[in-house]
Length: 376
Image (cartoon, rainbow, N blue to C red):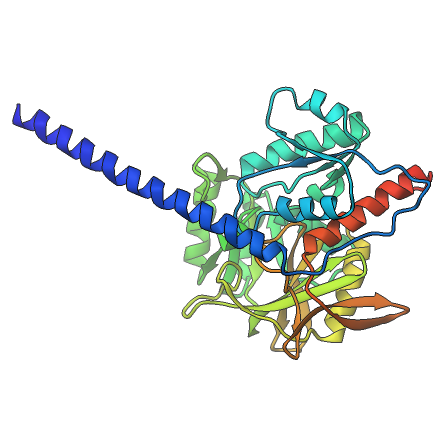
């Protein structure tokens, strides 16, 4: 009887603790909503000059929970300021096809987890190819989003200067590589979002142990329902200047900042330690070239390392969606703004811009081009 009583007491205590946690979560969300509204108004409204002979599209906006880095409130701000009709759409519903059918353009910040990527790739391709709707992201950019294997293939094919990467699905070839490579090296899985799944292999023993696990039971990743199985991504550990540099490209607008690792770590991604300052001209030029070579995207973020051996910048990876918590994605001499590429030059232009609103400009320009009969 006493044991049953004690179990009931523990259950009640746990229930009370969960209620407190839930209250704290709701309060945090409410505070974040307030912060988000304040942040939304702290930027220059992006208003397009709309051609009088082009009808504005009906937009389906995929909505998610409000957090500071949510994309959809910024998309919505643009739609409101430009008097574009829109409806919220739950893309996860079984009847998503009938909902999409009545719309012209779909706007969806697709999430990073594997299950969300699988869903997004299936639905985006269906909406774009079979329903002939304009959608952001498009299937071409989603093909390489959060996929380090596909990105590496693109870098190699287009001769984009990137960190030396070895990708193989061949067990024998991998073991031969381990025999000759100079350690330490970096191991990654296909996604490795926010530096999850990134490991430093210090010697052959570490590498062999990892490879055996990958090719036997599979390597457990941060998602409990998936493993890294029968492939490796090994990268050279580049001696660098202690930071990585992210450049964000949207149309002719360029932003960026420097990221630093936490003490005792080698990964800058996901650290939250950021410095916003001037970006070297050579990196801006390289970023423009990379954007032109890769499949079309409405935003492209390119992450670089500066190799301390030759002083050159090499691409680590790219992304079509990133965490954006402020309208100040570039600050030069303490002034927020952007670089604008015009007439062969990068010109700094001051001002606060939500990058999501600039993405919407590019999307609406595509809609205008389609209505004019132009090829994208």
